[in-house]
Length: 165
Image 1 (cartoon, one colour):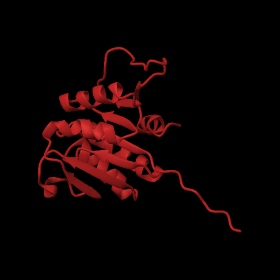
Image 2 (image 1 turned 90 degrees about the horizontal axis):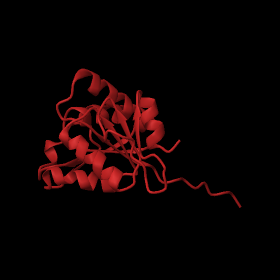
Image 3 (image 1 turned 45 degrees about the vertical axis):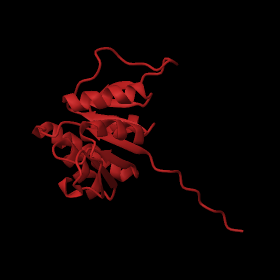
């Protein structure tokens, strides 16, 4: 009898960052997306511009799946690199949906929305990698003492943490 190959379910990684991002942030986000796409992760993002669009572009170009959780009611408002656009109608409250749907979060750059996603992910006990951004001033730890927040300096480090390597 032939062996049945079992596939592990994909890792869902949220990528958060400002909708109005600078050149460095968009380059980093594009590389994060590309690395995640090549690893077979499902990439979740807010679906709009800036870091979200750059990450979606990188992941899509690498053959990955990108789900955009949009703030409004119009799926057409999402960036053109999304595989799936979900119109939540929740505004910034979609940040909670994004965090609850992911296994890990990568924050690229910083904005108030990004900070809220980092905080929600930490409260939910999910690993967070912060790349060229901001997080809580001290390392956050779970009740077991395991570090949940890691500041990283490269996209590869961020993806390694998010994928649990």
